[in-house]
Length: 593
Image (cartoon, rainbow, N blue to C red; front, side):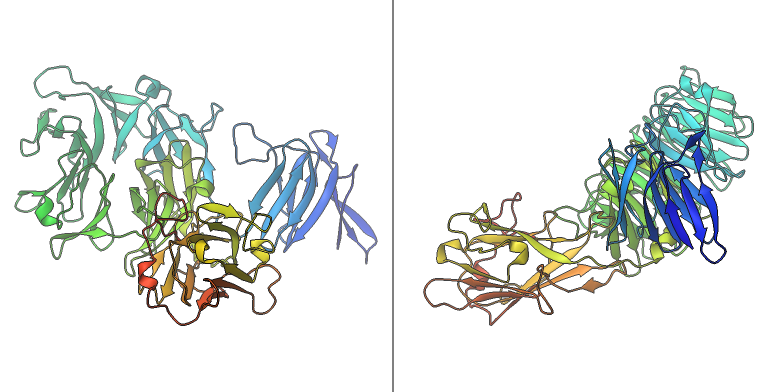
């Protein structure tokens, strides 16, 4: 088959054997489709046209049409497309007439963005908070600025609950039978019929006996006996089903409660803003207040999330103090390390478990997958997974198919964990910058040790007064879906692997003359370390960069295939310094490859 794009008949297929021509798509909205470029990738034909992008599946004969949507910043920037280019990283580039260049990765796991829009059937409200599924295949979505939404998880269509405009700031949600209980900020407690989508009951802090003490409810949990507990801005209370009164628990101080949750044993967990975490055991109904003595000197201040995994471990999320895990068998809480992503650990806002036992965490840095068995993690960058860097606390859900939803300050991110089982190529590493004495230098800089561009350089000779320097080495991947974890070790200089900094630099201050061995490794999509080293452009079979440091005739400092080769210097330990604020040079050690 031969695919042809024309200015009058759009996309057509020519069958040379039968001498026949068939239209795939010739007209759109009454106008001839003007196709300017074609690209074939696997079993798909991509057609750039005046009316947008068409993607035709040769096997299924399905045709998808992509156009600009003013309300969706992830859509095409403009409809008139003029050219297509498929790169070696399995990305497709599209040049438009008015909207510049567009890019899409064809190998990256798909993240679906559910964006706010005033249009019918779309999400109302940008700041998505709690989300809970009901028994009828609906996902209830509370927002902090647009009220309550209900999504049909089979079709993706969203219905806005008009009555919720009277309580636009929704926080805690809990489904009990055919009722959705919704806690709000400053407007009380609401009960919605999940079938009719109508508000059927409302509770207010009206000062009467048995009433709420305040109209702000942040969290709702249902006990194994179907009793409802509420975390409010003034403590913990329970709704007495017999009297209809709210009964406050005097064992918990009247403080702001961010989360209440029952575990599979019927124990009640209470997470507070400033008073740590409380646990009421289901049998003895005895309260335990976790203090520094329980967790090795750490504090559980600003606890924002609680989640129980399939093994019965309770995961405790805090703002600023890290992630913790409670093991029922030992009764101990341990600090969970999520290191390796720059200068600070990702701040976990919420988490859920997938069908394979991986924990998926929404963080301030993006979406992180964590293997509790191996304690290995992978971070998928916020720039790719959502519109901004801010996912929201208490905003995660899993549907019947196992798809995961995370709420953010600008809509919802949805994805299938199964799509991440596929492994993706590890990008090349290439040197892009040399910084000497806090100054960027290239082959045109006066006194520069470079005779050609750093990306093509195989040997660098540094003078004795140029021994404070750094190299920036980056992964060649336009779309950094995964924020690559990278580490380095300079043998003869340090005996431990050091994490790469977010600016991809490794630097040294006052490094003495000598020869060292620098090893660099990058973690691939399998979670394994892959040490391939720096690969300069045009390097042939054995690309290398050699660094010669010193004055007169001194030992050399060599970097070959991403490794510094040579015997260690006895003075090397004196040269390593702690990384600073991103400046490479005096008084600092940078991150690396």
